[in-house]
Length: 222
Image (cartoon, rainbow, N blue to C red; front, side, top):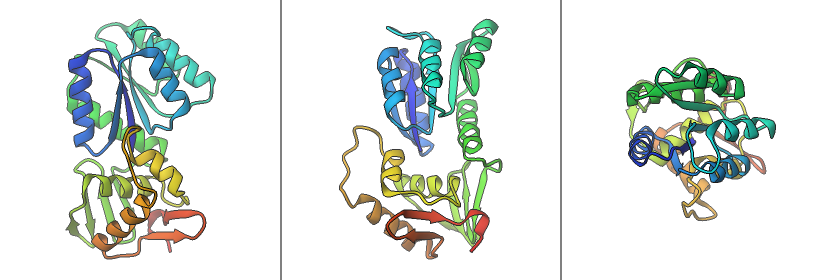
């Protein structure tokens, strides 16, 4: 899952970026409003954490332009505590949720996880596919109740496929959502990653649709 953090306060940006990275997300940070608008308009993010007080282009303008261009990724807006007008404006502009500063990092992570699940049509924080259970809160994967140790990138791959279970996902889409923009990857990196995850899980829950991509059957069907 790929997240863009748009925040010009260096300390907050660092803390949020580190926390999201530790929670299994591929995170990019942009402090400039105009640059953030461009990135959100041309790149595919699974979620954006958006501060409203930004240089060159304020957050509300950024958000309105994204929505006007039919950019539908979930957006969590950061607002000043007690500024209810700002929160109302953010929601009216197309925000999916808001969080007032200062905030607890655990709450931000919980809201991010919930927004990602909701955008994929999922409610339960535990995603299931056959014998495989992925706990999005604890970041744990098990097969028939036996814990499996995955690397952060392997976990991100399985999480994306299970969030979008029932849909065939191309290698290009996986590449777009698993890696940060500046991450260098080889042309066969997705195939290699899929192979590693299959071996560690010991089950064929990830199916190949030749010429199209990969899929996990929804709710364990098939």
